Every structure is written in structure tokens, then in C-alpha cells.
Length: 293
Image (cartoon, rainbow, N blue to C red):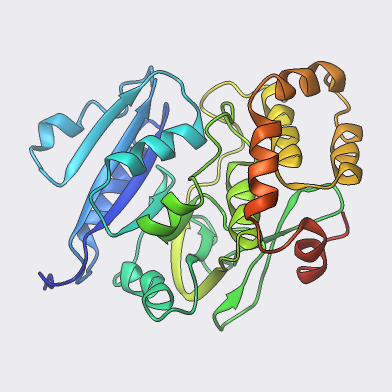
């Protein structure tokens, strides 16, 4: 039974060329049990396969479709968050399956003041018994999953596939980077920013969602955009040595051209603002999570 006194939760789902996945995700969210009133905001970011066209025919007021024109994963999430009415935001990929009381499990650590953002265990729909539990970074700034944990614990990186955060905290950190291109590093940048600003990111292993992992993206991804996001993140948060490490990691694109494009954005002003605002620096972050970068 829905508790009318519980705060409204907004599920923000960016989607692009997802086929039947969007419908399956919405059906799952509507089917499982929760005491929280929730709305679903689907940001249809320039899909060409009509994967979100069914939404208008549902006639369900709690589901809203916003159409954008290829703004990318980060900005699509921001647009969805701006339209959200919920006290809490849960960002979800458009290819998930949920379990009963999953919202309760994610929000409990936030409501108790233990965590500022929470991610569940995320398992492949084809092997649900092996969930990944949050992520860390390796020496190449690639994500690696935590495994085999059963208690609530802090994590360096919140996977963007499913994470809960209060709308107030999300607004305070400025959301996802608005200059990020199509896809890549948006969840890493958000997580680092949260930690450096003094917020906390936790994994709740007691909650598990199932994720459709795909071998290819349903839309075009290019290395220039991916590295642009990485270098913009580096200029926003990292020391000069780590910026140079990021530049050195650009092997199949032109690092000078990408750096020039990044510097033509507002990144230096943002860097100054972030450095003045932050409670911890990137050395602290790397040391705390034993990241060899």
C-alpha cells in the first residue's frame, strides 16, 4: 500500500534507441511493491526507433516523456532532474528490472543520514546471482566492480545505471557536467565531485536490480567525445600531474585538439570554482580509495 505521507520519488530514465527495453523497465517499476509515491520521467534523447512512442498511449499521469535532440547522457539526466517533482531522484538506465521494496532499500541510508547517494547491487539479467557492488578506478581510470560484499559500504564511484540522491544534494553539486558529450565519465565525474565536496557515496548490497548489459551501444560513440569528457573531468578536479596522465592516455585521438576544445569551454572557471568549494582534494580521494592514478 502506498504511504501518502512518504516523499515523492522521481525515477529519471534517459533513453535512446532502446527498443523494447524502455517498456520493460517501466512495466517492472510499476509492478514491484513500494510504499513511496513515485513518478517516472523518461528523457527520450533523439531516439530514431520510436522506443518511447508508447508512453503517450498509456494514459498514466505519473509517467512523463521529455524529448531532447541528442544532448547526451549527462545532460539528459539533468533535464530529467530539472523536471522532477520528487524529494529524491533515482537515475536509472532504460534497461533495468526491479525487485519489491527496492526504493525503500536505496533511500533508507539517505534518510538516516548515513549516505548522500546510494547505488544498489547491479547484476546482469543473464547471471543475477553475481551483482556488481559499486565501482572503483584502476591505474587507467577504468571502472572496476566491487564483489562479494553484504553490508552497506562507501564506494569511490556510483554506477550511473542506478543511483539515488536527494534533489537538494543533486542541485547543490550542480548535477552532471553540462558540457559532457554523448557518453562517458558522467557517473565518475559526479561521484568524484560528491566526495571532494564533502558528500558521501555508498553501496546498498541488500538491494539488487537486474541490468541488460549490451556488447554494443544502440547509438554512435566516438573516442573524441569520450576523451573530451575524461579531460574535462580532469581539468575540473585533478592536479596538473593527473591532467597530464589523462592526456597521455589519449592514444587513438589527437590529445592536443581535444585539450584545446576542452579549454574553449568554461572548464578553467569551473576548476577555480570547484577548487575553492571543495573540502578534499584529488590526492585525498585517490588515497582514500587506494586508486593508483
